[in-house]
Every structure is written in structure tokens, then in C-alpha cells.
Length: 477
Image (cartoon, rainbow, N blue to C red; front, side, top):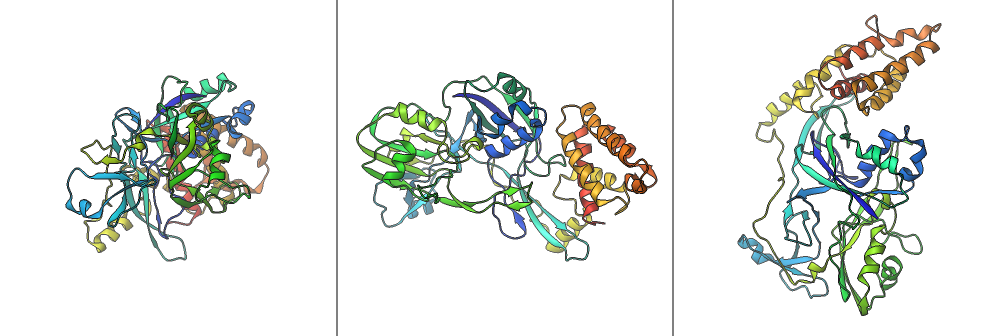
């Protein structure tokens, strides 16, 4: 396998929500999943690259998770196999002994611990934090009670690193097109103050960047580098590993198995069918399996097997495992380390409740976005009369604007919009429904095109229009 490094710098906050959350809030993931990156690239190019659909959609290329970049290295999830004395933690000293729990008896007073969410392996152990931004806003729907929501997103300015894995059969033309990407929109609310990321690709490497040096031994530790969808022979989700599972999945004959495995229920949303997919148990990233064999385990053969991913949805970065020799150590110490961010509280948390609600209300329900974008969204909304436009038309034009948002230049974006209006104008030339294509007596085409032409950032202008149309469709005053 070959690996194309992909560095992602967040120019705007990125909203990548977890698959489950409490009512009234969307909790943010602290990394950018391979499925999000893959979806953004497919959405951008699939209509242009019909010849490459098989490679993009059938797993020919694998998009690995983007984790925080620390000391110019991609960090990985912290292993969930360490314990420490509760009494030692309470003392608050800078140095704390972490003891490996795999195969070792848990003593009284021990609790499971981790120093942070991510760490750099194979060399010096640096740990990484991710800064999460929180926004509160009121969601007002006509005829319904107002609801206060809390949205989280990964804050801007942070740097993540991913890899695109491919083999020698992958089209070089497709890879060249991907490498030319400079800006990519990731996550939700793209173009309205969220999702803009600057992309930089590095030199291709021929070795698995997630895997350090491995020596043959009769005892190895496997770390789940990403979440994994694993199933037994009856197609039931695995929540732990037995000897048969180890041999089937990893090709290793195990005499003894010790494991610290965490699971999580996950689902996703199918936008085509507008329905949530069934919930399924997955093995969480950071889970650790210690395998002992009667003979030395062929490390090279195991690593080659791990390169393709284990289980389902490997093209989206799921099912990544690596051998981590460092976990053979019996201690792990918490030392002074570098953070790329820290958890942030709600910006309005120090304001009295009444004043907080008043401030949120004044933002006319547009406040999941950066404050500097509120005026642009409001102005775009005022260009169109409330409920004057036909909802069917609004839905169609929003789809076209989403396509225009992915264009590389303003001229390409305008060409998409103009082509759409030229097409529908011919269809309704003699129709009575021409009113739905006017706004306050002016052609909607002219209003939209002129608005996109304004400002330095055409993607931001398109984002304002997208949100304005969404608010009009929902009857927000």
C-alpha cells in the first residue's frame, strides 16, 4: 500500500457530531473521521469522475481518520488499558504512574485512566488535546415552542493529519485530481461559517505510518487505531475477542488473550433516504488486545494483514489496528507535555440567564454561526420575501447552490447557477408558475447571481444564501 499524507488546517470551526447525543444538543467528535473526508471528496468529484466511481465507492481507496498533529506527527488514540491508584490521582502531582492492566491483576483502589485522548507512539510520548467550541441558539418554528439548543464543533486554527491509502492499481489521474485540492468543506453547515479547511498534501510513503517497528515475539499488543465494525461467523457484532475470532480476523493462533476493549453504539444518517441506519455495536478506538502464542508471531505477515483494515467499512478508515511494542512496558508516566488545545466552556457561561437568553434572541436565530456572518445571512434573507418563493423551488435551488459551493472558482460557481436557471426558464416559459422564480418583482436569477458576485469570498456568499433559504422554508421571521 502507498500512503498520501494529508494535512488539514481548520480555517473555520468544523461540525462533526457524534452519532448519539442527549436531546437539545449535538456533541462534537474530537477528530475528523475518514468517512467525513471520503464523503466530501466523493461529493465534490463523483459527477465529474464517472470513470473512477468504482475506486471511490467500492473501497479502492481508503481514507484514514484525521487526528491532531503534534510535533509534526499524527497522533493516535490513547490506549484504554492503563490503571492508576485513585489515591495517587488525588494527590495531584505532576508525575503519575500508569500501570498496564493487560493480564495483570487489578488491585484495590485501582481505576482506569488515560492522560488524554490522543498520543504520539513509537517515539517520545506526546499527548494531544482538541479545542471544542460551544454555541447556544434558539430554534424558532412557526406554531411551536422555542427550543434552546447547544451545538459543539471543533474550533478553528487546529491542525489534523490523515492519510489516503491506495495500491498500485489506483488511477494516477484520480490521485492527481485529489492532490490538486486546496480547500475542502468538511462536516455540517458548510459554507455558513463552518467547515472550511485548507488542505496540503505531502510526499507519498510506501510504509504504513500507523505502524512502528515490529519484531517477532510470542507476545504482541494490538491497538485499535480507529473504531472497528467486527462481526462473528453469525454476523453478530463483536464486543470482545476469543481465540477463534483472533485467528479468523488477524491470522494468529492464540494461546492466551488479555483485552481491555470498549464498545460504543453507533449509527449514521442516510441523506438519500432521509432515515437513520440501524444502531450497531463497534469496538472503540483505543481498545487493546494482548495476544500470547506458543510460538513466535510473524510480525511482518501480521502487519501486512493489518494494512488493508479489519472488518467492515475499511474504505472509510474503520478497522485500523497496529502492533504497539511500547505497551509491553509496565508503567506509563504523566509528564509535562504539549497540547494543541483544551476544552473551552460556553462563551456566554458567565452571563446571567436572563441576559443570556436576551442576547441569543437578538441574534434572530442565526447564532450557530460566527457573529461576523450574521449580517450576511440576514441581508441575504431580506432579499427575498418571506414565504413568497415556492418551497419546491427553494429546495431545488439549495441543491444547486450546494454544488456551486464545491466549485474551485467563482466563475465555475456562477456557471452552475446560470445553467440551472437557463434550464428551468425554458421549461416554464409559457407556464403560470413564473411567479415562483421572482422575488419582489425581480428575477430570482439576477438577485442570486449578483449576490454571489459580491465580496471577496464567493463561498461565504453562497453559504449566506443557503441559510437564508433554509430559514424561509422553515417559516423563521
